[in-house]
Image 1 (cartoon, rainbow, N blue to C red):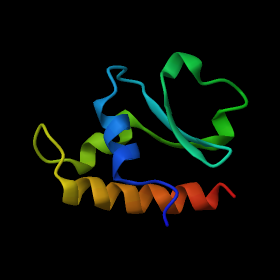
Image 2 (image 1 turned 90 degrees about the vertical axis):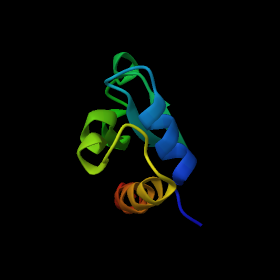
Image 3 (image 1 turned 135 degrees about the horizontal axis):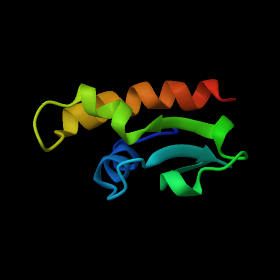
Length: 81
């Protein structure tokens, strides 16, 4: 089972905060507004919303795009250790 799944990526992309950030905290995939990222969250950052936009084609992400991003971000989360 992956650490980052399609729904986690969807929450990040649908966040109203343009600086939304995906962090992996104590086994949970969380989407936090940019203003809530502090020194304890910085080492746990998986991706920021704006970083993912270059991988999307069109206004709405397809399930295949979400799965592809989830797979990539899952690898990042695993590397956080």
